[in-house]
Image (cartoon, rainbow, N blue to C red; front, top):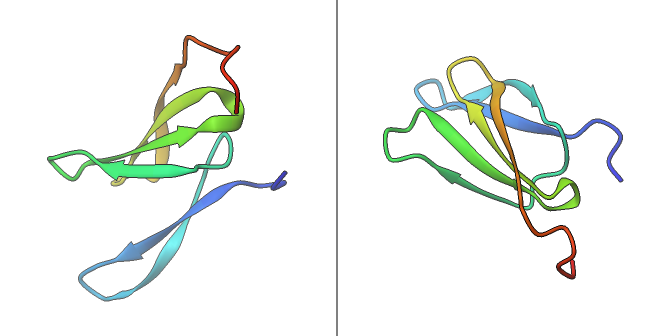
Length: 72
């Protein structure tokens, strides 16, 4: 397991690395919201979905998945 899961942030206007956003677990899939304000991430090992606020680089919500008995 990754000791400090994180997501890289890129400044699109400057086309350069902007920093790291700490994550509660390893993200196996991501999708941006239609308004571009959040990144939705699947945290498979935690059985959670998390939303990352792209303006603050902080996880704002974590939703527990309801079927922990499913195979991984």
